[in-house]
Length: 177
Image (tube, rainbow, N blue to C red):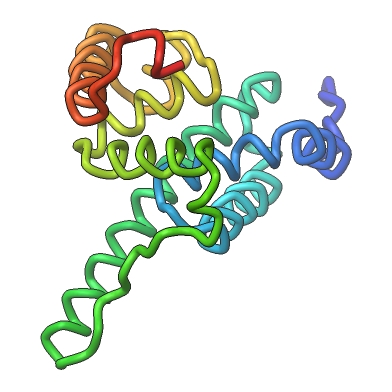
């Protein structure tokens, strides 16, 4: 009987965490628009992956698994937030308002805010594709894998999302990079 050596889950997850935590939090932040929630989403994805490490068929694809987990958990957080806000409105409570940041005086901050507002206005799939493409600089194949869609769908969502952003922001293609 041949025993396959186990890859040390602790070491592998620690290395992934050190190398990719920040970019995964930024990805989630683009989707959920809240730093605390984004950090929770990423932390939960790492914990889940660590617990399932022995069942991971291809450990070298752990980063792709994490990206997909972060996107899926971000979606879940958004669904949960929508339910909570609906319930709060029904009960006469106040819905959470997304306010402007304290650094509005800066031109760079104002542009960032405008882009984020325009991103929030996009349909979910377009927002996800653009975040993965322009923020994490993933290829169409990697995006398709992370979202569980075809590369043709990635191209379509990216094209439509970029066009919508250009319209909303009044910019040309190069200004979006």
